[in-house]
Image (tube, rainbow, N blue to C red):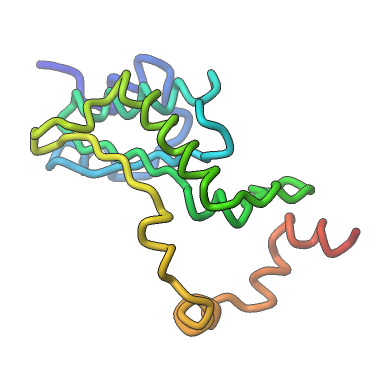
Length: 161
């Protein structure tokens, strides 16, 4: 009997921690999973290789890999816990970078495949571009309290400066 997807990743040393029930879910049915890529450049660095290979293994195990590129979040900046804000990008820059990232990812994943579990590349700009501030305030902002934000270390650090 072949190794399960999780056993394969464990054998390769690619699992540090795992949510209970993950192995059972992946053995039960095709499961969609994504990995996000930040479009601050038109290429990817070596640190992206392990996540890319994880998507390849996911596909080979019969699951559906999604490469999520943050075209919208790349435009507005996402410091990801860093103390400095990232430079804001104009609309053309992330679009150029997403095309470059797709080119890199296409060396590993066939986005034109017609297989049921064919990999897909999605760009969060595609669904965020028409999302207005009023939509955000009404649908998202009402769920984020000041106490929640103040509990974040990145917010505390910025406010203390």
